Amino acid sequence: PTSSVKVIADITDDLSGFSDGYITYTKPNNQRFNVAFVYNASTKLYEADIRAASNDVEGSWKATTIFLRDKKDNTINLSHNSTQTNGQKIDFTPLHLNVSGVTPTPQPTDKEAPILHSIEVNTNRLTVGDRLQLTAEVTDNESGVASVVAYYRTPSGKTKSISLAATGNNKFVGSYTIGKYDDSGEWVLASVTARDRVGNSKTYTSYQDQNNKTVNFNNCLVVISGTTVDNEAPILHDISVTSRVVHPNEKIEVRAEVTDNESGVGTVRVTYKKPDGSTSTIDLRRDASG
Image 1 (cartoon, one colour):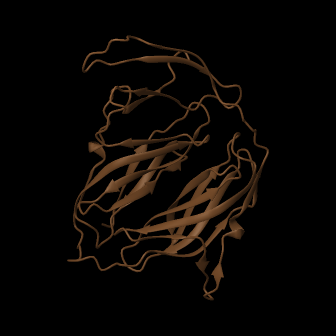
Image 2 (cartoon, rainbow, N blue to C red):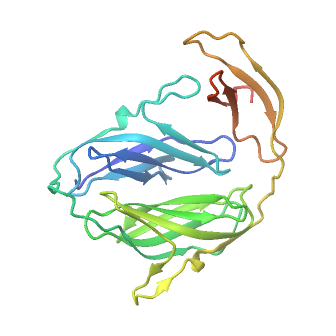
Image 3 (cartoon, rainbow, N blue to C red):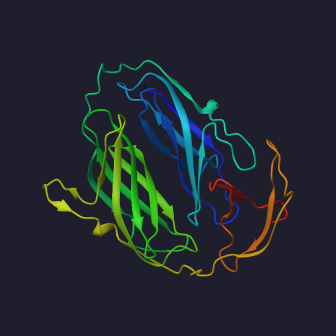
């Protein structure tokens, strides 16, 4: 329980760049927790630090999903034992952990969610390439804090989530790098969700300070400037399919030519409607020719 295990990932994004992500583990009692990927400047890889509390759940902790997001807010959720659109099966078995040496309590006694004591931002004015960094103080009375996620609302109504990682002394730090095509204007910290190791969680829109005074998140409002507005959608120039007749277990390949005048094409998704009225989607990937 006192030792940690690092999940090491080589994460890249050829266009806007990788922003943030996390891995989700499920314990034998079906409790889930997220661990953020943190960049290691020495190895140039991303690491998720997995720890078990002394009173944690013994047995096989299974890696179930990995969430990744780029700087244009494109996201992907990779699930264990799922199959990608290219037919490749995702297998997280090598990431599963066998936890032993813990002393689990006969019944869960931790019924209280973590408490948010404070949160602050490193600066209130940012531009392209700057890091929006949040520092929060969060405690839990028994099992310990498992995850802290902050949610910003941008001027266009989008939500930006920032996963905060533990740095010691009940402090949690997370950051988001402002991208070229992010919204300019005021970003409002809408909420913060804290979850403990046995699944108790609470979403905060304010907190009580040490004087028992209610404090809102106004101090975490940030103003973004210098970004580029891209209001034009990508253009579909051509689309084709390898075959119009498909037999069971055969793979269909869809090819499309799509361009974008400014930020670049983020995703291309094709939806087929079946005779029974249901639909099936295919996510297209950029080929080697670009």
